[in-house]
Image (spheres, helix red, strand yellow):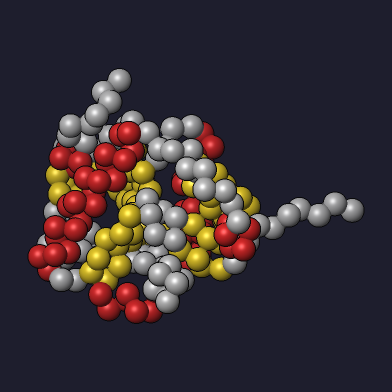
Length: 190
């Protein structure tokens, strides 16, 4: 009889500080290398747009790669999250980590089928199960944004936005961003 190891948050606490991102989804350990420069650029652009809107409206905050500990065997660090001011106290605990779902989670795809499968399948399932209201999967390679929204108990794909489209959300009243502006000035054009 063989047993499969279930990784936990305690295991993450002793991982080496080696520049890699370690996450646990349903007890499985996932590791990512340092992201591509375009990945970082795009995270910054999205953060900037959401932060400016949040500052103007006072409705919430956007965060880079916060830890979200849904459970001991579901401990992840999405690229960006947005949480409303009203929900902040319910999700952030004294350890400075999220322990419940923010309203919006954003993942920027890293190259490779393993990375894409993790964001499109494992994380979609996790965020859906844990109550995220909206999930954006952003691809700098395809220059598009897939928008998933909660429909009953699941996140469902509602639209795929291309460069000529405008990004908005019922979660973010009055927020509007031309998708093309997010992909401007990409550092690596190949």
